[in-house]
Image 1 (cartoon, rainbow, N blue to C red):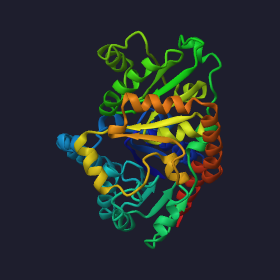
Image 2: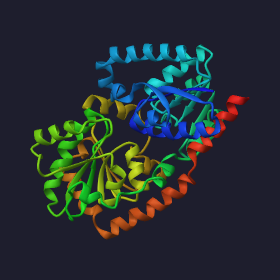
Image 3: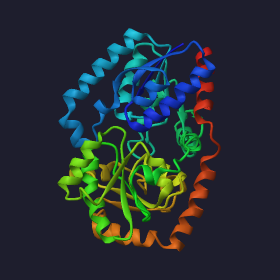
Length: 372
């Protein structure tokens, strides 16, 4: 069968790659084409556009880049029609993918959606759009099945794919030596994956390091950004010599860290599954944040707290994200009693997420649905 996948972010590229590998085992004659990243390409997809070209975040940023975004829709539609896939598989990335789903349905193309948009967080009315335009939905969070059921939509809960990703990760025992890190305990900094958020987050994160001279602060470079971009930011912020950068080693960094300051997103869940104590941080543009406050209807911004339905990890959002508050929160986080509390919470999180095998389970259900 012919599969066309669309993933617009680093996390979607990762999960799309696992899904491609799982589908290829079940369907040996499968061919894959689509939009994604290096991992999907390595898994065998004929990559037509890299997600680096799609990274616009926030309401204001989208408006400023509307011409480029509209051009991407046109290019994508033409590519799908030229390929004539048996199924279009959309991986998260709802701002783009929900619109493509509606168009694809009108063209008579079968549409599968892997990793539900977070419609339970805001703009829940989109469930009707999904119900109309998506043939099969494959969800990864335990509460999503019940959410869709309230709207009369049956979806497939396949488990969380990060459980397999982390299971397959093997840390490098020479991590410190290879990255020229000292024996000082490490605080990991995960400032996000897009340039807008990285530049916005790093000034506070790096300034916080001044208050912890007994620790070394190490930035996890996103795969979507070049090393030179980070080094130029460090120099601009006057931190060229005091901050270390590692790229393509985020999981090993977290496994070696005493704690982490993490920009909200999938990384918060990855950090938890790797059992690293964390503080969740986020700051958007003032206009984007003001709009978001009016439409978002969940208590927390981190997946960890959402899944646990409690504030297991501290969240510092917008004005709360400042050097004084990050310093206070990090001092508290480094206490043995706080680490023990979070470790217990992380075990509860893993229990809620269930067993691994999400991509294999999803691939099997997809192939069965295509044969009907």
